[in-house]
Structure formats: C-alpha cells, structure tokens
Image 1 (cartoon, one colour):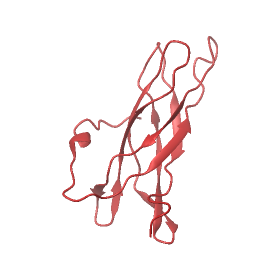
Image 2: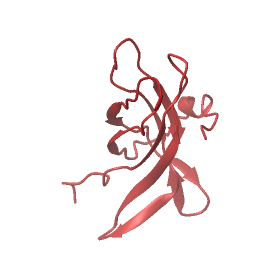
Image 3: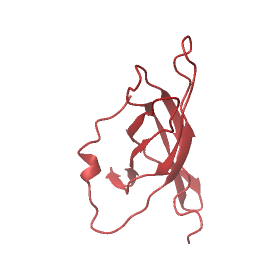
Image 4: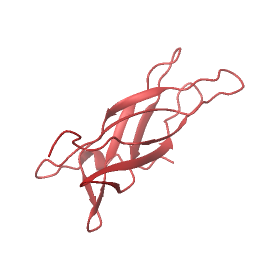
Length: 118
C-alpha cells in the first residue's frame, strides 16, 4: 500500500548522504480485458533517518508506457538490509497510482548503494 510521502519529498539533509538505483517490473493487471505490466527504473532520494541506526528512502518515478498510459510510483522503502562488507539494500513493495482504470502491484529490492565506492 502506498504511503503518503508528499511531505517527505521536501526532506533536506545538511550534508549529502547516499541514494540507490532501482529497476523492476510491475505485476500483471487487467487479466481478463488486456493483460499487461510495466517496467520502471530510477534513483531514490537521499537518506531519511529512522530510529538510531536505520534509514529509509523515498522513491518517485513513472513506469513505461503501455498503449495509452503509464503509472506513477510514489513509495517509501523499508529499512536498510545489511548485505555484508558495510553495504546494504532496501526492500520495496506497493501499488502504482491508478491510470486507465487500474493499478499494478510491485515488489523489488534496490541495488547496493555506491557499488564501486570505498
């Protein structure tokens, strides 16, 4: 389910933190009438602190077009998931905004932050 993140997109850090690349595909919708899905990709917003050691990111993007429509995605990641060597990813799930009379669910994980950095 989409979280109301409109106010979070105005969040500004005093110093630059990090972002995550992401890519994915929505689940199928309109199974009876016109089965289809969409692809999407982008870069998250910077860190939003959450608790003492965790953080989340906001994601806002659009899917590709299918026939005459696309969908907006506006969601907040889950907290960071350690993948070793001081690196992490985030799990993301939600539902697109409605367009052309339907929505799509999606589930994906962000890519590792700063994959070639120290």
